[in-house]
Structure formats: C-alpha cells, structure tokens
Image 1: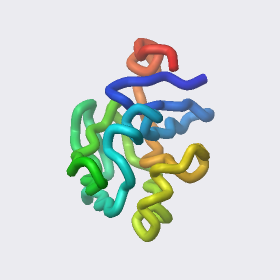
Image 2: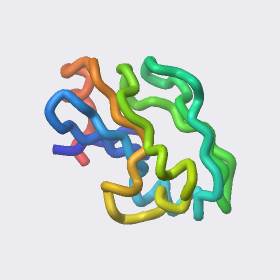
Image 3: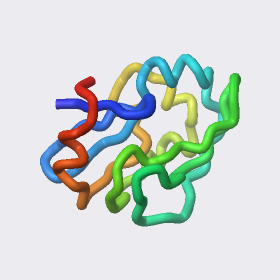
Length: 110
C-alpha cells in the first residue's frame, strides 16, 4: 500500500519505506540532470536529504517522514534520468527504516 505527501510516494515493504517522486513532481521538475545526496543517515520530517538539478528547476528534496536512511538510489547518481522513469524499481530516491507507523498511517492514500 502506498501513501503520498508533498509530491512523494511512500510505499511500505515490511519494515522499509521507499520514497519516490509522484508523476506530478516528475513533470514539474522536468528531466533530471544531476542529483547529490546529502551526507545524512537519519532525517526528521522536512529535513533535506538530496539536491536535484533538473530541466525546469533546482530542487531540495525533503523527507516526508522521519527515519533512518537505509538505502539511496546510487544508480541514479550516475544516471539521474532514471528518476524520470515510470518504473518504481528505477525512480526511487531513498529507503527509510525506523519510521513511526502512526505517522505513515496518517498520510494521504496514494
């Protein structure tokens, strides 16, 4: 089951929460040309976790939920255009663990 917040999809898979851009955000930013993950291992809701340069904007991605960053889409660092893909296995940004289940459940249904 996926939820959404601030133009991000958050999908729960067991104890891991995958954060990706919604199609609306993909359209708003345009073709992604560069990403830079910040050197943080934990985020609070609203904390920046990466910077993105795209055709239409420069964008600082902020965490939709608090948690520990368990994975970053390192393939997208070398091929940032993957973030424009429709395939969820290519366009994800980060994966979180130690997320408050109640905070996740309170998000809008995707």
